[in-house]
Image (cartoon, rainbow, N blue to C red; front, side, top):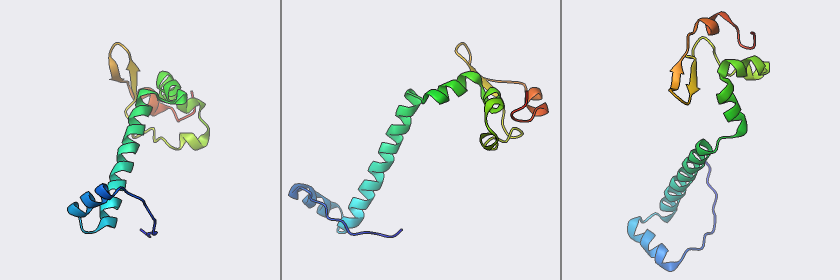
Length: 111
């Protein structure tokens, strides 16, 4: 990965602590930044799971087959109907497998 030189201002005490941990400040700071970015991505993902995008909620409620029936051809190509196990979410039972016979005999987008 190409690198760029940057100037960062840090408190003296923090810099001394970094120097006690690692002689290579750049490597130490790079590793810290990589870890922080990963932590923030995970935090955003968890937030999105707690508050999903309205389209995700709609798709969950309608189910994959219904979504595929209304999706354009580009979106339908994202799902291989022969490789997935149909499931449906119910508040009472959670995720439940569905019969594949309907999915196997229909092509995506056809009813």
